[in-house]
Length: 95
Image: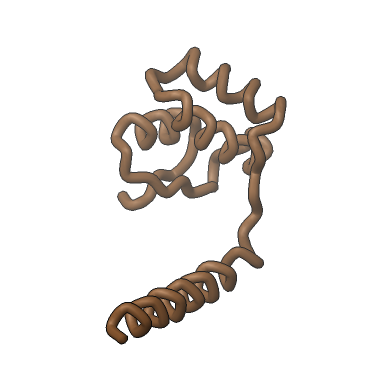
């Protein structure tokens, strides 16, 4: 009896979380790591001491900003990635 209730609770929670996450997904823009993003990531790695995944994240933002990063915000808590994003011209949040 308890296992059935827990199973139903997990299913309900799962459905609830999927609904919450699907709502904003209609308004975001996904940048996939295609060749141009990989190229930018390589350039970023030459300028900044980042991990590969961080360079891809920054490269995707640079691609999204069409390489004109001034006036765009970059949200991040990682110190190295924040420093690199700031050096690339982004305003970094939180301040």
